[in-house]
Amino acid sequence: MLIDLSEVLSEPHKSIDEVVGTEMKEVKVNGSRFPVSRTQPVHIHVEYAGEKKLHISCETSLTVIIPCDRCLTDVPTDFTLSFEKQVNTPEEEQQEEYPVSIFLSREGYFKKITPASLRMNSEQKFKEGDVLRQSFETTSNAEAMFFTDHCQVYKTRLGEFDDAKASVLGDYLPTKLKMDAGENVIFMVLPGADYAGSLLFFYENGKAARIEMKAYQTASNRRKLTGAYSDKSPLACIRRLDEDCELAVYSNEPRCLIFHTALLTPKTTRSAQGVAVMTLKPKYHLETVLLSEETSITNRTRYRVRAIPAAGALVKEEDSEDQQISLL
Image 1 (cartoon, rainbow, N blue to C red):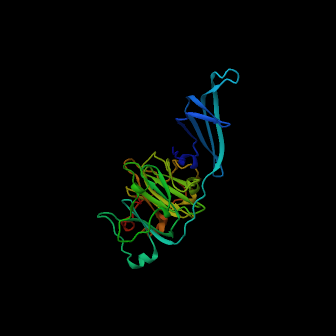
Image 2: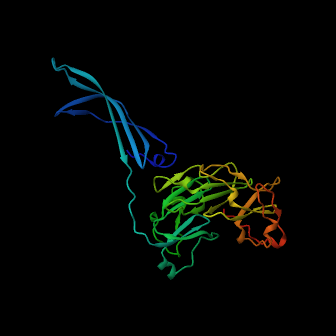
Image 3: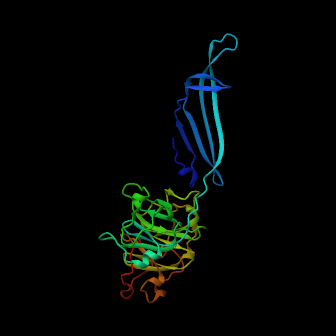
């Protein structure tokens, strides 16, 4: 029997209880064999013991037919068997590291390509209608997290993907990572070994949550985490934040406000709903968020606010270049 330990090893370290049958027909004691007349299922309990250790306990009961010492009459004798052990989880197998570039398309195709291969051909192939979503330069076994539209995140090592070429479509992530039916990738992030920084989740209702990257750190390499972000309002976009900066928030009215991310308090609960950033009129919603320097705004003072929430200012025609491209 195989037991999936993913929920034990990952936050919040849920325990596992399983019941399995036994086919024990006899027991052997001091060289003698005795028949088993009754067995009970084995109850298995697994819980996280900290520092990448597991505590495993098992218990069952059975009845053994043992001859009486005096008259040799068969006597049914009940026994309770129990077992406890603390074990270390397997150490991660070290893989050779080398530079790679990774590419994620909007439809969820992923490629890991070496510099040598890119020098031969750098023109990326996509399905008709598909385009590049994100790309990074990293190393071949770096950890990656893929956020989906089901409020889940899938964690994996790039070493689980074969090196590819620009001329192929790549791995289809919903299949590769065994995602739920109808689930789609919307954002990729490389957390790094220390899980430094934060992720900013902006929602259509005008709220934003600043979640510390460490909230996604787990004891194992590949894991599906539910409740990766709040489901109380549709997600507008995700941004990684390594240092505080100014962001431009757009609604579809269209209005814009520019605020400093230091106004957002970091949270450790992944599903935190966040705080109101933009005050919205009925029928309007937050649409996207850009670095202020990425926008075409010429007079940022008009849109800059010192406190949130704020309504922002109507976007002037000279500032309304088609910058509002959703990260989703």
